[in-house]
Length: 299
Image (cartoon, rainbow, N blue to C red; front, side):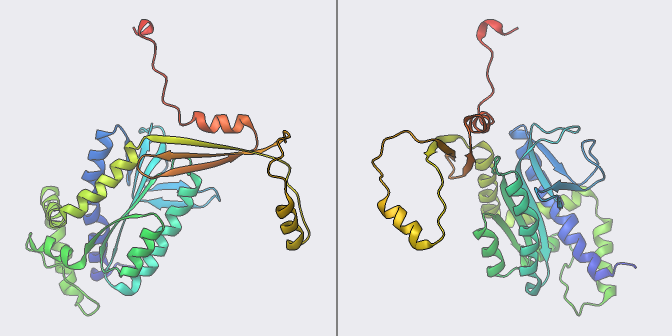
């Protein structure tokens, strides 16, 4: 079935245009911090042109931008940032889109929780405060361009981006044709106009992204928990046990587990629980800085 001109125009704004606007920002950060930027297109390390990551439940999620540490054309690295883009023309669809985004990203965050990746979303169009706050409450960093800011950006190139449910197909087709006639330089010019309109918000979003990428470990908290777990058949019995428990008993009790929390200087934290020393040590070794060779061993 052929795509209607109005639907195609929405695709241009929400996919092609937003990608033109955001991709250079992501590429600059990747180059600055020696990360690999994965985006839609061919890559030897994966199949097809989509960026697809699998969560711990075996579900596949298609993404827009992923910044990877130790990644390359041929090797999938560790995710340090997931950044999604989305467009909605009407507020009535904004809550559903927010839920769609969190449904795709949060399972991946859980899967890669030991990396505590940055999660960001670049939204454009009409989104309610409720939809935006819902994402923020879940840890997303949000960069939002209003519908009017999109219209103003296209106006700078002489293209009237306005449309609604009553806009004739012929009018939307004209908008599509105008975009298709633009070369990449002209498209980037429109994107730069959009970014300049909200330069402060763009700068803040990128600062938060870089802080997450460059964060340093501030402290490591290790809590060895000793004792044997006990099971009670009633709440009353459990309360009685707690109230009569001898907290000053210094007798050595078997280790139950190690609880570890790694705290970063930007406020992020990563937690882990392990039943033995080997697991706890192996977990912490993944956060060690690479060993540098001694001076006399450098070639």
